[in-house]
Image (cartoon, rainbow, N blue to C red; front, side, top):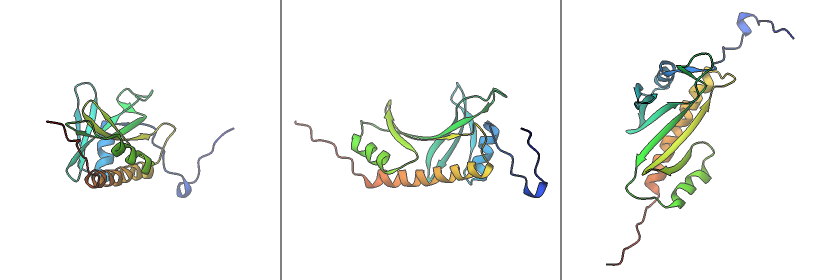
Length: 156
């Protein structure tokens, strides 16, 4: 089976199958976020924030085409917590949201949202994923503010 190119007026936009750190930084900036390329000492990252709450865009699996390009990435918001949060707080989030999972690990409350590029996606899809992350972050902040965390009284 042979594919033929469509005329320019009807040609579908090129699909994006992988991005490097510069492309991920540009994606966030075009979505209205501040974005700075950084590193955690082991891998490159992109740093940004929503309403003053920082998050990282973490590249995932390297593309076969080039080691400095990636076929997936995740948005990650990490909040340091002093004590283990009630499982009901995390469960309430996970039960009410289809996208963006919340969990606790190593003294951190984590909100994570994965994005796949493998197979090819449009630029519009990637911009929509950034918009979804922005919405999730706003909802997450509201969820944390509305959920009272109570500490059991310790006997003296």
